[in-house]
Amino acid sequence: MQEEIDKKDFLEDGPKTVKTNSLAIPLAIVGAGLLIGLAIFGSNLIAAKNQTGLAGNVAGNENTEQQVLFENLENLEPISDADHVRGNPDAPVKIVEYSDLECPFCKRFHSTMQQAMQEYGDKIVWVYRHFPLDSIHSKARTEAVAAECAGELAGNDAFWKYVDRFFELTPSNNQTDINTVLPQIAGEIGLNETQFVSCLTSGKYDDHVQENLDNAIATGGRGTPWSIVIAPNGKKFPLSGAQPYESVKQLIEIALQEK
Amino acid sequence: MNIQKAFMEVFAHTSYIALASVLAVFAFVFAVWFPNLGLIRDIFTISSAPLAAKLKITFSLLGGIGTNFSTLSASYTIAIAILFGINIAMIVYLLRKKRTQLASNTLATGLGGIGSGALGIGCATCGSFLLMTILSSLGAASVLSLLPLAGGEFGILSVILLVLSLALISRKITEPLMCKT
Image 1 (cartoon, chains in turn brown, red):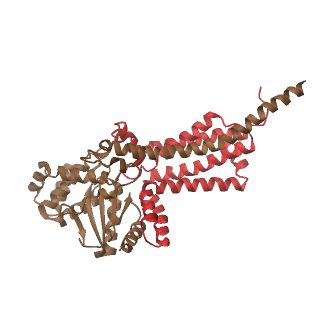
Image 2 (image 1 turned 30 degrees about the horizontal axis):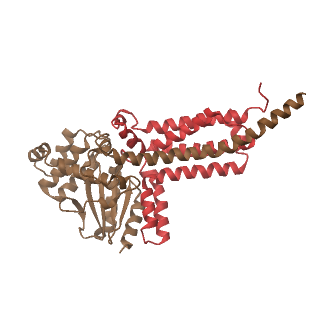
Image 3 (image 1 turned 135 degrees about the vertical axis):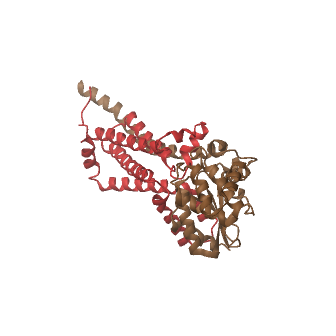
């Protein structure tokens, strides 16, 4: 009698167990994949629709649907006189970097770009644009305006000297004492401090910084540093984060071949 | 103790070491490439560069673990990848060898660990990707500035959940086979 019950239990439980097992393995793996996949897809969707939350308003940006999945590099604002360029403006490869002066990875990437400029000379040009992430670096926007003021008071070279010195001097992550450090750097690079402070408080570069930031987001920037490498034939390649010099070098080499 | 015993049992089989290793490498590579999936796509679709150059840049991006991650985020990214591989290998072992059902709490803990790990991925570059964008959708991006590790908490949580999941699976693996009343 007991044997019959056991047999019955086995017959009932056996197939049930096998069925559960066969589902559990793919469920665990697919579930994990789905979680990651959905998170990525969802975050892109959310990022496109909530750009104000990430870093500010995106004025007149009607391409959000196209930005949902990948970058939209065609939204890149053409390089103009309003930009700050280092190197040969007619260089075959152009690198547009969107950067946040309080971002530690931007600080690291700044050195990488300096190394690239040294190695490639006239073959590349470096364009610096602002991408202050207000929600995590509340001081970055003011610092971006300060760099613009340096450019206004003493030209393009002063802008770059300001940015170089700023990254050298400051610890990143919003720890800069801007009331002391900004005028200090202005003094070090030979700017008139009174004029500098007056420019800084005037608000005249607020729109310019905001336009840079809007364009960073419109091209697909979701964090800093965010760079776009433009090949001689106009093809554009996105580069996100402070990638190693070897990657930057390889990307420049690939871009140089695109004629 | 359970974990050690379960490890000895599962990883006495080379195939499970191979499975855990492949999955760990896959998870690690995915996490490091994640910020530049768009670049990798473009390199292989619109670039006319030779294949060797394409492969060279793709592999060089793995060096981002040293430049594009903080020490903390690099540490938990590597830990998550390894724990992910081990977890899945042990789940597969448990299901195949023990012919037992996976308790829902074990599965939930494991998936929770992987999910929070996904949140932690890509936090390396300033303000970027999953966590930032998800929080911004909730109007809570500034919350990040209140977190002492600026989002690194999710990576640490993920490691804890995956270890917990490992402990639950290990207990199940080392349980003596018996009929329960």
